[in-house]
Length: 65
Picture 1 (cartoon, one colour):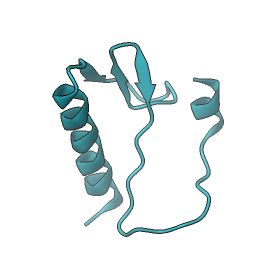
Picture 2 (tube, helix red, strand yellow):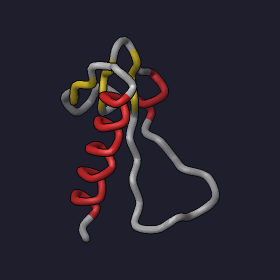
Picture 3 (cartoon, one colour):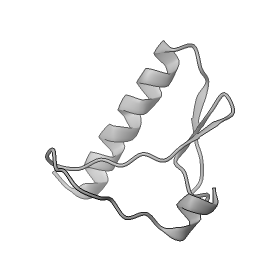
Picture 4 (cartoon, one colour):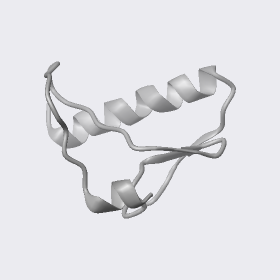
């Protein structure tokens, strides 16, 4: 599975979760620093092939958002 496919699956899971919790998720364009805006919340989604521990590094625009 490619990284793009993994990211797509992760975003779908977050959208499903948000809808189950009565929120209104929408995917935003790239460059905002987050992937989904949902009822006033800004959500950055990260997915990976397997469970791993440790730190994750984010782009500067993620922190600015």
